[in-house]
Length: 443
Ligand code: 5AD
Ligand code: SF4
Image 1: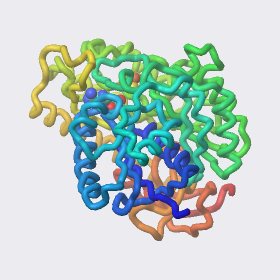
Image 2: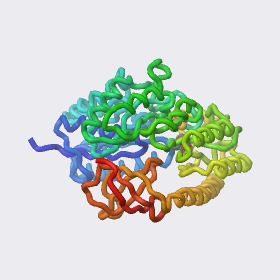
Image 3: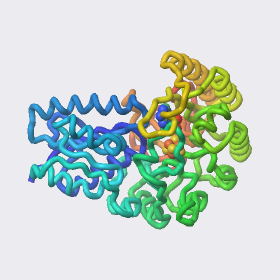
Image 4: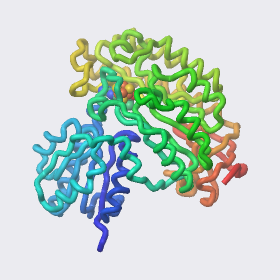
C-alpha cells in the first residue's frame, strides 16, 4: 500500500511542536508519511495557537491557503487541532466548510479514529472532550528523536490564571506526569542517542505539587542519574514557584544547564498584582540574585508584556529599570493582546496601540544593547558545545549550543554531530556566536 501523505503545520510553542511530533508518530502507524510540503498532501493538520491575536490571525491565513489546495483536491482532509481549536473550533467549523474536523489538546490518542471517520465521510466532527488520564497516555506514543536534543513533556495545563493568559482555559488544569513514565521515556531517548533533554510544561517548577510525587528538583536529580544524558534543560518556570532547592541545584548539578527562562512580565508591582502573578518586583530581583550567587555564569532570559490594561508611563519605567538592573541575556517582549475569557478583558484603561508600539520599541532597543553586551563577553573565551546539526543559514557550518543556551556556529566535519566539542568564540552576533573548533571533548 502506498503511504498517504501527512502535512502538519505547527504554530506556537514547544508544547505544540512536541504534540505535532507525537501526531506524526501516531499516524505513521496508520500508514501516513509526514511530508514537508502541504501541496500534494492527503491530510493536513493545523496545530494552532491562541496565545495572542497575532497567532490567531496566522492560523486563519494558513487556513485560507489550505482551502485553495482543497479546491484542487476535494479528497484532501483538513483537521484543526491545538489551542485555537479548543477555543473556537466549533465556530471555525461552521464558518470554514473545508475543515473536516477539529480536535482538542488532550485528544491526540484518538486522532486515527477521527481521521477514519472523516475518510468515510461520516460527518464533520468536533472532538474536544479531553481523554481521561491524558497525561498518563503520553507514553503510549513514542517520538523518534531526530536530533541529539529532545523535548520531554512532564506536565500539562496550568492553574495560575494570570489575568492575560488563555492557557488555563485551553489546556486545562495542571496535571503532572508520573516520574516513572518520564524516566522511562528519557532512558529510551538516551538509548536512541539523545544527549540533552528539555523538560516541558507550562509551569515546570510546580511539578508534582498536587500529586505529592517527588517534586521538580527530585525529578531533575533522578534524570541526572540516567546514563547518556549529559545535559538537562527545562521550560517554562514561574518565578513564584522557583524554590531555593532548585536555585541551589544550579550550583551543584553538573548536568543542569546554566540557563533559566523566567518570565517576569512587568517590573511594576501594581501591574504584577493586576496580572495575578503572585510575586513582587523585589521577590523577582532577589531570586535572580540567588540564582547568580548559586551559579555565576547563569544566563537569564525572560518575557515581558507591554501595555497591559492600566499600565502607565511610570509602570513601564519600572520595567525598564528592572531590565537595567538585571540585564537579561535575552528577552521576548509582547504587546498585550486581549484574549477571550481572560480576567484582563474587563479591566479598565486599555492602552492604545500606538503607545504599545512605542513601549515595545523602547524595550526592544534596550534589550538589543543588553544582548550584545552579554554575547560579546564570550569573545575570546572557550566553551563546550553540544553539536546539534548543520547550521540553518550556512550549510558548511555546524551548529550547537553552549550550556547557557547560546547558539554557536563553526566549521567542522559532519561526523561531529552529536558530540561535545570545545570551541573558542571569535565573534559575537546578536542571535549567535561564531566559534572555532579546538578539540572533541566526548562522543
Ligand atoms: N498578550 C500578550 N502576551 C501574552 N503572553 C501570554 N498571554 C499574552 C497576552 N494575552 C506572553 C507572556 C508569556 C508568553 C508565553 O506569552 O509573556 O510568558
Ligand atoms: Fe499562562 Fe500564567 Fe499559566 Fe504561564 S503561568 S501558562 S502565563 S496562566
